[in-house]
Amino acid sequence: MANIFDKIREQFNTTDLKAKAKGSIKSFAQMAKSLTGKRVAGNEFFRDRERLINRISPIHIGKMVTFYYDPKLKATLPYYDRFPLVIPIEIYDNGFLGLNLHYLPPRLRFILMETLYERVYKVENSNEINEKRRTQISYSILKRISSTRYYAPCVKRYLNNHLVSRIYKLRNEDWEMALYLPTERFEKASKQQIWRESRQKMRRF
Image (tube, rainbow, N blue to C red; front, side, top):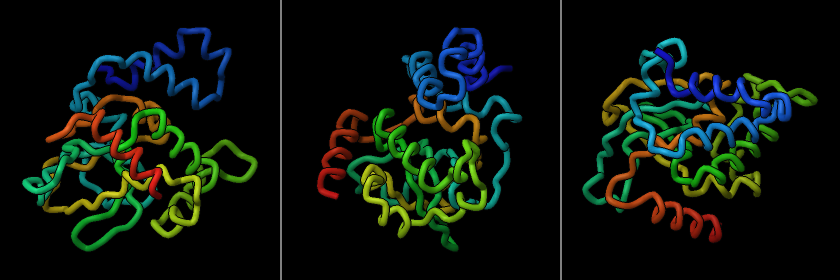
């Protein structure tokens, strides 16, 4: 059964956007957004075992992962995301620190990822992702890149014993689509309120 990524990719391939914007990450992401105006069920990510790795594997810095989560301090948190979309940036014995991209509205997620792509992931004079440089992402690197102030609201700590699903690693080619899919599962506050507070945090950064 085709998953949400396959549906979007098929639609993109059958439109003249492919010819007009071949190789354009931004246009591809905009297509993803236009095809997912309605809320997407989180389990649509998990239907295609070839698209997502169906196993718990070691967390790797700089990858993109998603999972269900039950926060330890949920009773006192003002809000939280039960289905994070995370790029890990530091790893600990009992969990990891990561950028949960859901804390930004889709347009700002893209700006953050575009900055990381250009300055951290990308091979010089190439459009390919450099796996070695991907592992060089760290909290300190992000702080040194002033234009990544967009990351400030996204930094979250996750504990291994509060994961309530397997960790699913997204393939590189599906990252841009994932940025625009409305899979966030915020509790105790609306996404509009959370995104508004995220913008306020960025202005103070």
